[in-house]
Image (cartoon, rainbow, N blue to C red):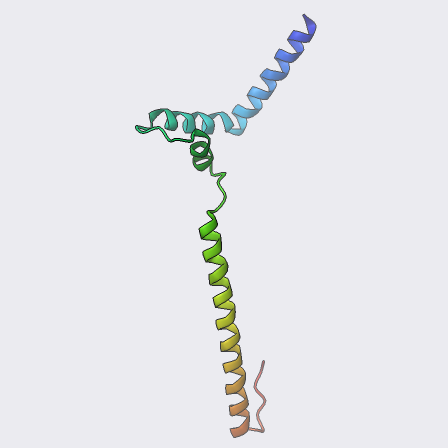
Length: 101
């Protein structure tokens, strides 16, 4: 009987912790949203993940971002080379002045 009360007490403490942290409210809202969904999703777990914000970015999005990063790095290198060339040309016409880098 004492073990039952101890377990009950721990459950109650944990429930209060979840309630205080707002976890119960968020879970309730997401579950109510799933319940009220006119067309139930094929995968309820994916629905929960999506609405809890626990989804990872889509693979296509990640690949597109990686490609964009690569392109921007190449563009940056090209522009840096252009800046260096222009600095060299300026030095040809104004050899006495030093350009700050």
